[in-house]
Length: 209
Image 1 (spheres, helix red, strand yellow):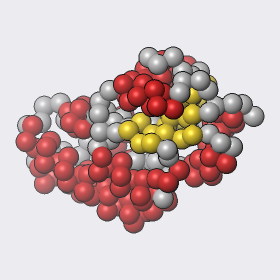
Image 2: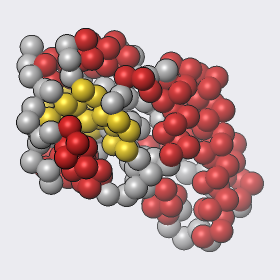
Image 3: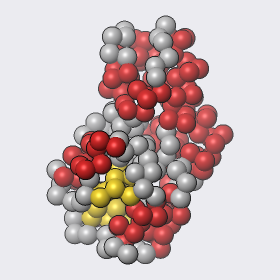
Image 4: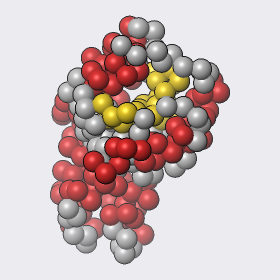
């Protein structure tokens, strides 16, 4: 049974593309950029800050991407506030509550900006469930290592949706489980120790039920 569960945020706990794709549709034209396919936006979620925008618009001027990033973050917060707990994948809130009730310490490691992470946790109403939140940095392996130093590596596990998450966990020698109900790509499922297709299954993996 896990004693510490480190979670990714975007694509693992929250359906980020609900907000991001809508913000892109509303804002890209303002900066002279085309609306990219929603699949391209979703595939880039998990990259840190400007790397996210550069992956979607590899040839765009830096100033356009900088301006877009500010406005998208602002609009995401507004959309998230309107959606409230609806930004969570169905069953996630119950999963987190179940883990907490069983004595598992919950932490968050996200490449998202402080504003983004703060707003999303507030919108979803789950900030109080996490013992510590690390964010706004590109190196998830380091963030994960810092959490393990504080809370202990024994009984620790990681839950995420991308190969960035797999690398963060593997680099620190802890198991990693995929959020199959989130943004785990079919071709990447085998990289995880196991993939849960529902939040309930993820809780069972972490609790060894």
